[in-house]
Length: 230
Image (cartoon, rainbow, N blue to C red; front, side, top):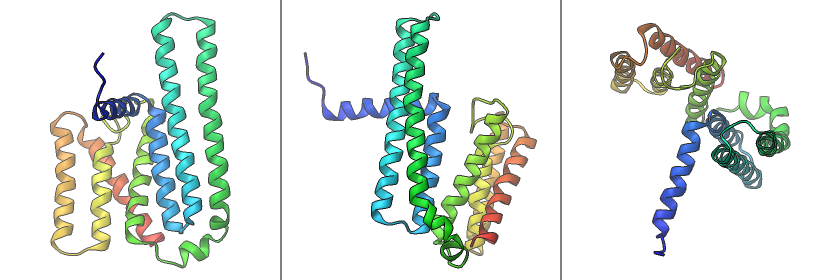
């Protein structure tokens, strides 16, 4: 049997992760929450040890979700029909994810509690670095869009349906550029954002109403971040 190369092994592993991200809504939510936590930690200036604890916890959460998906796929392959034992196996696997999530919440609480108590001193009376502020606003826009669509029972959380997620992100970035720059970059940013919205309508992925709603949500949320937090 021919031994597989390291590059091929890495490629297959990446394909596995991408498959879970595309097929599992919970994994996409974990990714967004993880990104928001890391950005918030950087904005608050946590120590290297605290950041290490957060990154390790986020990694454990991702690994648990990957194993949970793998177990579910194996069970479905072995017994596609309903079986009580298959249900128990899936419940145990989901329980592992729940424990990992509760652990992540506990670690997040222990890391952030002192910073949140001193939030007025750390944030409200100190200017947040620009790169963190932009990332926080974009992450907030994406999470709100996903929560909105999940609440409506939509499966394509950033594709199709009300509102347009990509248009919201495009206009959020345009407003962020407007708040930090002047002149041509601002015009170009809004022109590109408008083109994103137009392409969604032209591709028959969204209606004009869905695109307009997405643009309004992205622009307003980012404006609130910059005016109230900056």
